[in-house]
Length: 284
Ligand SMILES: [Zn+2]
Image (cartoon, rainbow, N blue to C red; front, top):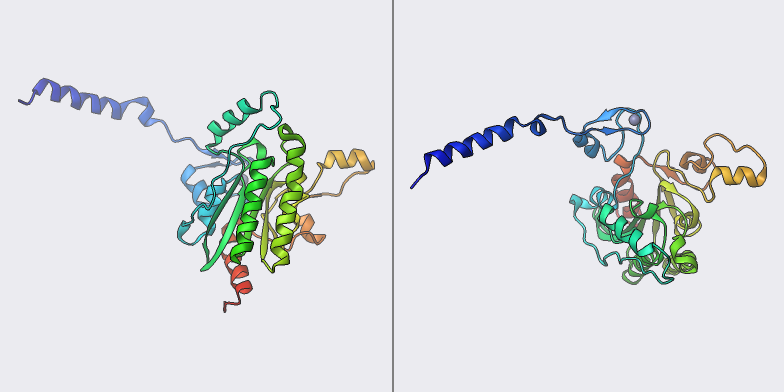
């Protein structure tokens, strides 16, 4: 039997919910950290997290990068990112890692994917700075190494979106060893004729710069990306000199031969597709 009273109450509840202040609140906008323009979240996401007003390339997740570069946004993850190993039983590391994982939704900072970019099958890896600022521990180092080894054994090109800072302090010497491990994997890959494109994103510093970020056949950089080893202040204090304007930006490194091209995020897919097709010998 229908209950008219209950039906009326349900209708009132629906009406109330439609009129509730929460429903009328404007959606939260994203503020550009460069020019402070307020951006609609949809507009921001469509622009791949690049400010349409000033062109500032802001943080974008590794997953969003993969979606952007692979054909139709389709890719698979050949090996999942492993959770960090607290090999030194470093005080507070396990708690910090768990907290970062809950916040970022990632197990660690290094992710890998494979799929077609402009029709050419490739392996990609990315460092996501939302997990412990993209510092490189055994997990992220392992992901990059496995990506290079997998590309080498299957004869596939490799693309790595570099980001992050130095070694993962909490993993001590095990973290420092990742520079050697990743560099050796890239060396073996290149020695076998593998084609590697490194994409420098903001910020790429420390051990990432000192290893796989600087070992590519082609090094691209996003506009305005910081690309260096030690911070400018440390260098100024060490050499006792003022550094030139724009020191360590991707553009500065382009002028000094460390970067081959500055590529805006919106053009990344097309640029990678052309480079991979050229390497594969296809007509473009
Ligand atoms: Zn802006």
